[in-house]
Image (cartoon, rainbow, N blue to C red; front, side):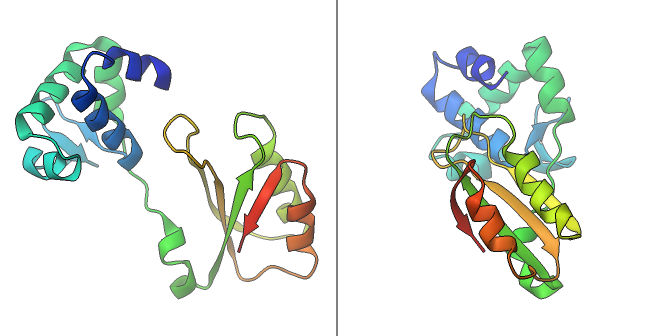
Amino acid sequence: MWAEIMEEFSDSPSQARIVKFMLENGFGVNESGKVVCNGIPIPATQIAAATSSDRRVVDATVHRILAHPTLGQIFLSMQATPDLSKVAGCLGLTVITVIPVDASRKGIVGAAVKVLTDHDLTIRQIFVTDPYFVEAPRLVIIIEGTLPPGTIEELRALPETRHLII
């Protein structure tokens, strides 16, 4: 689907940049033609500044999104989720980042989760970065507490793991 979204905006690099920024940040649109984050409007000038664009390009991008039936539904429904990795230390949580060998392969999340559940660890949050949008995709798992002995070695030994960051 991401390839189809980017194909829709292939004729306008500036609009494609805005769409990509919106997707990366979980920004949607409302029926009034405004960029929103969980229903809260974000001024087009702020989106323009963040994307090195112009507010008119932001407005044109939003109107183009709303005019497309599928894209309109996607962006009208978009929601942002908090990233606990930035505050994990304050909350007594541990962040595990897995850099995969090949992010397009299946089973990366399942393999890592199996190791953690075998150690009876509570997972608070999991997210992956989409290989279509980032150069270095990764799997981030946030758990309660600390890792018991041997867990790091088991995660590193997974064939799906290129690099592990704790």
